[in-house]
Image (cartoon, rainbow, N blue to C red; front, top):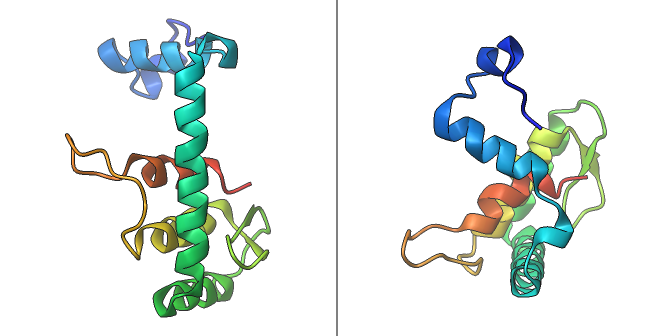
Length: 125
């Protein structure tokens, strides 16, 4: 739970942001409707598949090689290579590869690709 403390205020959690953070922290897998879980799994598989395809494309190969040259702690896997790099670099590469061929999911009302926006930072382990 996000407490009403000076620490929470320090990181800027006020009003609606605090409510959203509290909801996310308190949310349990068991709270999710089965249809949400099913659709989430489909979207995650789509994102991984899109990233795998992107890793075979010229720009994906360039991105893979680039983040490998940056060095750093081996934290997160580059999809399509098995190589581990710092988490931020993996998020950059995996997200770029996943979106680079325009086969990733799209949320039409907002005209954006929600899963890759989130999954770059969450699936890099």
